Figure (cartoon, rainbow, N blue to C red):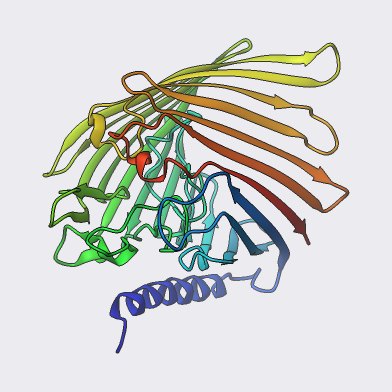
Length: 410
């Protein structure tokens, strides 16, 4: 039986690949004057969960390996480039975390004051540490990162214009990618609903043409001395799914059609870095505002050792309250960033998110260090404390974990 949903994805990817190849081939005099660069990251990961699982089929220790090759072609003039960035992981137990993705596959043309690209890309917006409200172009790779930092490649046409009054970015997004969730044997997942584990294809799009409902976005960004500012608007398929009727016999999961206006600003005053992100999102099912505001103060070159310590404080508010699937509806984040600025690029980040209204507290630790010339070791830990029954995180309240990752770069 033909899987038409998957077939449509391959058709879209093949279309952009063909279009980028054809356009790139038209490079006039520099068609054979180009440079190439290839890199490859191979990593092994061990994730150990500290407590016994809540659901049948889950394990305590998960091993996995991942590969991420990247290939870049650039014309000598710098006007034309073609980039491919692929990712794949093989997980010991979680069938959904065994996956592959085209992170980037696009052609780009750069002129003096404008540039145009077409294909699958990753675009990042935002300034705050704990949550990225305005970052909406790419779908979250939920099986890769609990905190939403990893993103899937997004099919798009992207036009950027640089003017004296700022940079204008226009996006046409012909296809919306759905979020994958951990499988039956994976951790950090929802419980079975009516005997069924929630999967990516269980979520429909609130449109007759499903994922092919077109989306578009525009963003203006500029700087005024030490202040960087951005204003954006997105219309189309929301990247965040809605859950309705949880706990009933007929729960519903879908992606709404939304209109979101975002604002972000960052200002540097001496050792202080001031940050704010805010959004207003409208859909026929709900409309709300949310914001994240905070500051980071850096103690530089402590005792002339080259060590920098940054202290971070942020406040997050979401008008949806308990309906906010990020769990950050009225929370405070406190953290510290440590950079040794040594040859091995040793870095450390630790923090806690405390819910003001409920008992829930999240702790996180991240550390990394380069080994020799082409190796890197990373440690990540996540801990949950006193998780409220009103939080989405209650479903994986016993999934505290410590993760060790070793990477080799070629």
